Image 1 (cartoon, each protein chain N blue to C red):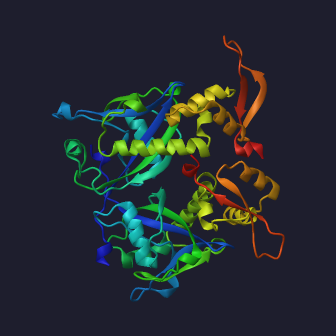
Image 2 (cartoon, rainbow over the protein chains, first blue to last red):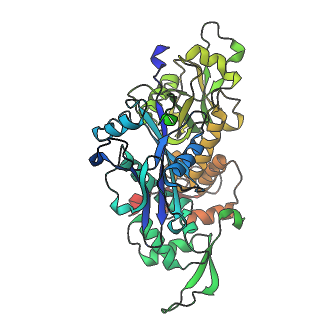
Length: 237
Length: 237
């Protein structure tokens, strides 16, 4: 059965953490740290990610790696896709870094992608380990990243948009009581497109989970809008 | 940076292929084949799965492995979750098989799960390679499986149920023109619960993708029901 024998591969995790600040969608990126003699012009931006350790589960690994590189913890990280292109770390741009940091730089690496969406104001990244910087960067300004991390970000954004519709993940970023204008803005920022106000409201009204309240905004200069709150399916039953 | 060095792991793919026959939901399983001197009482049912080969991408690997073990091909397999518990292949029940079939039976194996939902009548499995049997088994009668495959099946069913609502995958299993009764039966079988007819119809009517036709069933003994067809979002725009 020798044709089934494969040389071991390395396995890593990469974290795509989105932050919402009420006005834009940001992505948490690190800058790779210069090792001794590491050519500064070859430093790259990257997702927070690293190899999984022996005896470590994948979810635990993602939480550990995110904390080690950015100091963020207590974030719900959800596995969304595994990236296994045989050449995904073989690019010339990545070879110097791999030779400095990895025991076996030529090894194939398969990476498990995790993602999260958080209120940006709740999390202040601080770089450590091999990150020399960790910061929020607008998703529209993401630079060229190490390895295949731009592809991983694209897939993360795709997942985010799908879950926005099917899992209602966006509501966690709004105040408990919100206006339909705030909700539409959130959708527009995550979907990166303008939505027709009338259609949007028609679709939202079909959602049993969005409950109109007998309350209006207070302290606003314009005409106060009606407030709504969100109830998860479990609460509706 | 030695604490980041991990010994290589093995990577495999496992396929959770669901079949629908109009009346029940089935799962494609293999029986592990007896090698010379392999104790017959230790044979187990398992998902079709095997190690990824060098230079092989994950999607390609899933398609190859499914074909090698069950002869099924041309099936759209979608990656849904990666399973990496450090002890997932360390169970006693799996040791004899691993020692017979794997070059390095003690190696940690991380597996990438793929799933699919097909019309059962279109696919007749035929066992080959290390499968001695490949067959459709009712999801309610799934036996104890090798490794953590029962967990993988459970996660596959969870994914199937989520995608039924958000991705409309069920419609591909129905005739082009269908009744709401047929649609409800499909949902009930996949969700494994009875649905309230009135609520179900109310929810379906909210879906712009389900188009009522000016046509009724023909050749039925009972009162003929109205027919509907399904249009994907892209077609509606």
